[in-house]
Picture (spheres, rainbow, N blue to C red):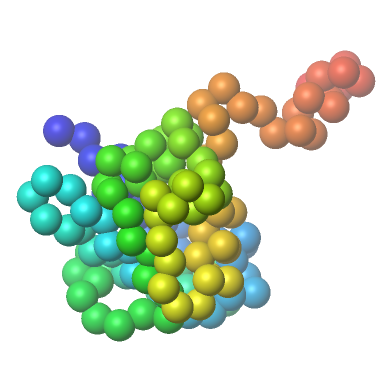
Length: 126
């Protein structure tokens, strides 16, 4: 069975450096509930250098709590992380500034295009 959340964290780990996080340093733990327990992922950010650990049982600067089902929808673009926070489906403890940076890593809706692509199409330069 596919696990979009695990695939997301594995992909982050393989990237190594994330330009969208170059101004950030800290740790974020994700506690994702499911029917068999809780998956814990620790995201370590050091000025854009990113490491991920699947055994995130230790402390962190920020902890994000939610269901794995919801997080699966977020990382596949079917739901938006900001909407989940507003609805209190995801909660955050600690440094919320770090949690807000995670939005930069999340995909948009599956059919979404970058605004610059739309502008290029209108100019005929795409």
